[in-house]
Picture 1 (cartoon, rainbow, N blue to C red):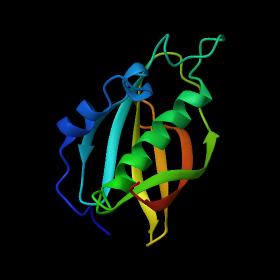
Picture 2 (picture 1 turned 90 degrees about the vertical axis):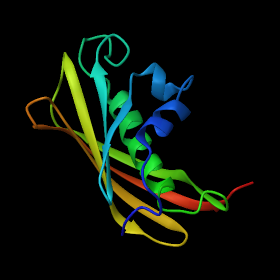
Picture 3 (picture 1 turned 45 degrees about the vertical axis):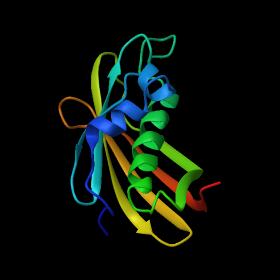
Picture 4 (picture 1 turned 60 degrees about the vertical axis):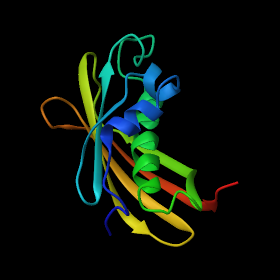
Length: 140
């Protein structure tokens, strides 16, 4: 599996302006032929009241990366992907720094996609492992 078109990281980040993605500080940083990477700060926007990274923020990063990557696998003039299900295992707490997530496809089919998103801390240790299932639907 590889993306249908070259990845324009600047365009992807520009498209996220004014959304939850921008508000959480999520930035797409790199792409390979079949993977997408992005970062999110661990700061006042993304921690829970006890001062550690909020699990929901990790899930937002995972769904963002998987959904963007999934849309790179379809003809966006005819189709788009939407989330069906996401799960996340939170493995390590973080109080500060930056987390980096990498989305890789497990399955890219005509009607569904499944992506694994690995989120790591600055030392490369796993913070969260997520699996996202996407539906491929017609553009309305």
